[in-house]
Every structure is written in C-alpha cells, then in structure tokens.
Image (cartoon, rainbow, N blue to C red; front, top):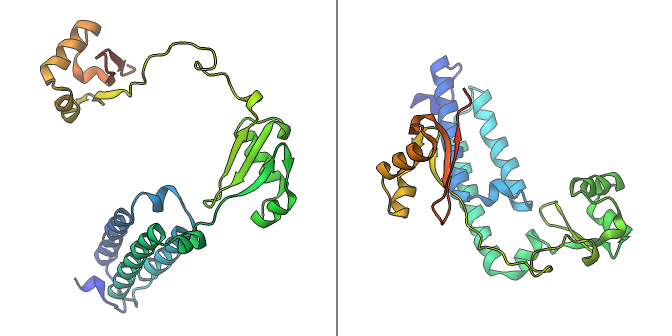
Length: 235
C-alpha cells in the first residue's frame, strides 16, 4: 500500500496500482451517485464531475502527492452529492435552485429573443437543434422549451404532427418488448427462467426453425407470442 503515499519517485508498478485503484474507486463512486450523474449532466452533476476529475488527476500525475487525501475528499463529495440529491427531492426551493424550471424559446412559431439571451444560445445553435429534430420551419413549432440539462424540447403544432393509428381508428396489437434469448452465441438463462423455459427448448426451436446451433446465433429474441427472431453471424 506504499503507492498511496507521496514519494520522490514511483516505480512503474506503483503508477499502475494508482491508476487501477483510481479507476475502480471512481467506478464505485459513479455507481453510488446513480445513473442520473451519467445520463443527465445538470448543474450539480457538472460541479461534481469537475471537482472529482480535478482531485483525482493530481495524484495520478504527481508522485509527490499521496492518494489518501484525494480518496477521502472524493468520498466526502459523493456523500454530499447524495445528501443534496435527497434535499432536491424533498425541498422545493432547493430543487428550483439547482434544477430551474424550463423556459420558452419558441411559442406559436415565434422566437422569443430574450429567452435566447437568457439561455445564451446563438441563433445558429437553435437552428441546428431544429435540424436535428427534422423540423424545417420554425412556424411549425407550437412550443420549444430550454430544459435545465441544456437540451431543447420541441412540440409541433397539431396539424404538423404525424397521424397515429388512434387518429385513423385503426386497431392495433398491444406493445410487446422483445426478450433476448441468445446473444453472441450464449443463452440467457435468466430470461429463460422468467419465461418458464429451459435451454433444451431454445435449442429445439432454433434447430427446427432455422436449422442452426446456438453457437451460430448472433442474436435471438422473442415476444409475448413466443415467436423467435434469429440473426446469424455473417460468415
């Protein structure tokens, strides 16, 4: 454990051990903080990312600095992050401070210039976001909101929305999420257990329907009707 402390010089092995420890420590810290810190970089998440990255970077590049202080500091920051997240769920005022309400950028086809200034969004960025959503005319937008995580939500006017089966009185079948039975030539036994099936059932189905073995299957999925879709390796 000498690699945790400061030295005039570190061996190659000690540098490697520092890197490995830091990687798994940050992995555990991110897991504790939850998926939100990865998927949504909001104000609190942005501060945490900058702080943790800066703290852990120094002992990974300077042998004169020990790692113990950095690990303790990051642990305290993670605990503080969890406390603040809990407060944001319970305290409305604090929630509005770190995650303010969205505000309008476009309303009924008209750009609200004051909101662009408030969000610090150049016109080119707004047009770029419109193109990403395949919106060719601002006049088609009923409402565009600047979200706390820095994204823009667009809502088209009703006459420009695509017709749905409900609009056309078309009967539809219930949605069925596909279940993975085989991936990369390996059977998903947990999924089979949920379905009340076993490996022999999968093998028989694959063999009878497609004439192949499990090891030849890249992906096999099924739905509520137990219809199996098979994708083979390209050989």
